[in-house]
Length: 177
Image 1: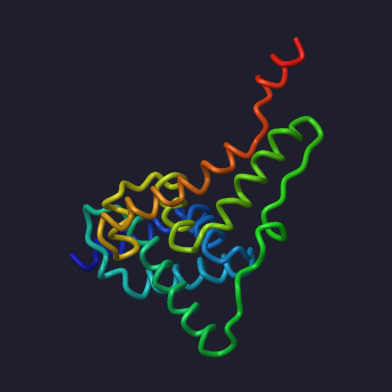
Image 2 (image 1 turned 60 degrees about the vertical axis):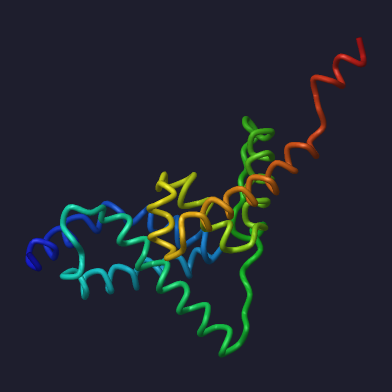
């Protein structure tokens, strides 16, 4: 069974690199750190491929590995230097004349998501961007499913404030008539 698991990991790893990098970027807000996280995840996955259970989802297992590596890195940083995260403005930029309004809104949403506490930001990413179920996200983050639900509710409430703060264009147009 260990050989089957190793084969599955070796054959499936390349297909998940982009998603792992996106997850690394969400966690770290740094392109370079995301690349380092993906590399470390690949190395650990290959080293421990015998621990993968055939019949389960490889991407969920890889996300768990990446999450574990990230947590260890954060702990190390706090001990060594206490370095913080990079501001979303520096990493997540969008531009383009044709879609400028869409880009502005997307940037506002990304900035708001990046401003969420890390646990909420990561949970939002896993559930809404990567499509993990609440149960899968709970397993990936090693927390109870109720914690996932609570984090998402808090994140939705905060992100909902962005919607409330936006001017009601339709109402302004109606007032002019």
